[in-house]
Length: 164
Image 1 (cartoon, rainbow, N blue to C red):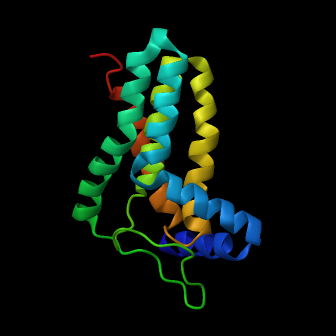
Image 2 (spheres, one colour; image 1 turned 90 degrees about the vertical axis):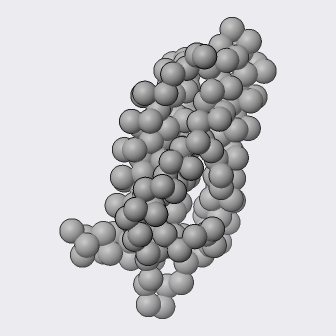
């Protein structure tokens, strides 16, 4: 399994790289730090859709909460970030721990919760997928870190109560 993970990571680090795509992946990664992009999206939706304001605000807070919960898992697992000889990561990270991807966990948690609020919330999965795939593309995570993060995020997004 580790060979498949490394092979897929190497493929993602060496295929389809252009300055524009790398810049976009880095920008998305920064926007995803601490769930900031999801806070912004949730607040905007709360302003635009007053009938679901409370649920959108819960979605806005879910991103940072998911990252906090994810960090607990990182501390338990203690998987180091990937190292590919000759292919350094194209971004920085707040910790040296890789598993699971906090970007994927928070993104899929919020996208799942947003889909529960309104059918158009499913569009958040496009952003969640782009943000998550950017992590191994930049060399920040193994693909399995992203996959497990996404699964944890979906589970969290399904169980979070959307009203107080």
